[in-house]
Image (cartoon, rainbow, N blue to C red):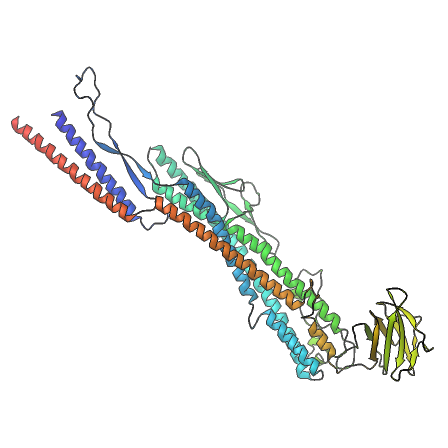
Length: 571
């Protein structure tokens, strides 16, 4: 009789075990499309055998099996592949954000386009060329001024967008800190639940999946490290500082930076130490905010400062429409200002004046040649001469002769004589009825009638008449933008193109690194899913297997019940 009842227990255990196995299989099928789910497997084992040989058991066949039971519901997971995914996930997130940020900078630069700095520069250059051909045309002068405004607006538009992007990154970091703190709190809560379930001898598989998913999300934000202690707690840290320890979470905080600089720092609330991530989204954002944007903004400001200085210098070498020496065209920038160079960009009040501003544009030439420069010092002079400069006794000295338009030597007075002058030093001269003499005692009150400055040997026909209408200075102003060696061994136009191509090159590299990381992650995910992912074909095969086992166990119970009925009939 006892053996018959034990048979019923064997069958019941078999039914329960197969039913629970079907539940596990059903759970797998239900989560087939859950990317964070790791498949589970019911591990069967023989239940504890019935009795062992002893005094009260007279030998016989010995132990009898009591059926089957589920030893554990196992979570199928390859920890090595999982750790590799976490590691590569950081780099993938870093390059994803870096590539996105550099694309944003490319969009801000907006080159090539019809409204970028390069186009505005070309339009300004074209208007200067038009002015050199028509220096007395007010329409041409107006286009120079309007295109100068347009160039300033283009510089300031790019800088304002770069500042706006930097501010948005700064805000992103504050939001990221909030997200990381929430993830830390959730992981700490799951730690508490997982330890409790493990303490009861069960496997908290679904809770472990949830915790891994949260850690993976945090892992994308910044480079974090994790280890699991003996109780099952996940200990999470970054830069050697803990974010999660058991059921405790330690928050990160934002420490405001300098006003208007958008350089807030992330600090650990418990230690007060700054967090400087080396990987993940936060690292990419900080690098973009503190290095990339500052670098490109600095290059643009250097270009703008050089443009202002070079343009003003050349502008002052010409004459305006009234024959007056040119003054500054752009408002000089101050190095001591708290504002950037581009923020200070503006035309001078004289050029901006609606009534007289156009006349102040110095399009006329001051007779500047490759080796001699004439400055009439604002005097109203006339006369045509020939300057002859030959080599002096030393490399820094020249011999000077000046003849009138008929070839008669007028300086020095004795024909055939010459005067020694120093290279690069202005020679102050006076004019008296066509005769020229050196001003031996120049001072600020009476600097002479005009000055000559020499840099090389040669002959040059010069005119003391102011060349207001020749437009050569306008042409010289235009040459500033495409002449070599203006800034870092290149032209202003070439310098700007270097900035644009630098952004493009960095963006291309980030794109390639992102694609490489995507390929690595895809391969690791494929490996991970081959181990931990749910295969519907495999689960359907298990369904059939467990169903047949369940049916067989049911038939076994039915047969055992028939035996019991027969025995009861006999009794």
